[in-house]
Image (cartoon, rainbow, N blue to C red; front, side, top):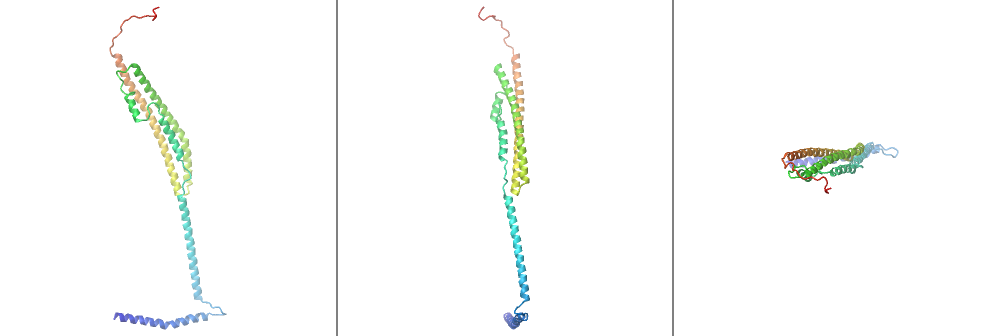
Length: 258
């Protein structure tokens, strides 16, 4: 039942289309003929469709042009964002750090070295030896004093070197800020910011060097004071220890016997 009904419906639709085809063909042929005048055939429907097609085509072309312009702008912006910063302060900053490091390495007496410090506090700054001679005690005291004076001088030299770096840091900071403000893309701005951070790190290194040099000088002074107190106790003990006292003997005014 269902298949026969579908077949009948299809046959009916096909017959309707066949019956209407001559009417449509006759209208299609008669309409341009009715509009014919002077050998020129004008079809308003075809003309309207052509105009509409041209307008749509023009709109598509405009959209493509706009899309190409946007893509070109995007590529230009990407190129700017990927452009590297044409300025580097790395060499200047490294030179400043090297100058400060050289001043620390030129420390007089006891260097900033753990092994040398341990040896010095076992000998020069250790407990005064009861068997050492007075001349040895005096020599050790003089060595400690020289170390303290050298530490103070080293601290002042490091301070002077850090102050000398201030002018270089000022110039680099001005140049980097100018590069950051004139950056054409994200990469240049980021690189300028990274170099500013490097400049800050170099300044912190100088500050660390000053603190270390000042701490070393203060520690040497305190160590000298503690060692001097220990040596003073030893010398006082020797002075108060009973000895043989005065022993009379022959004295000669003139060694040659004259």
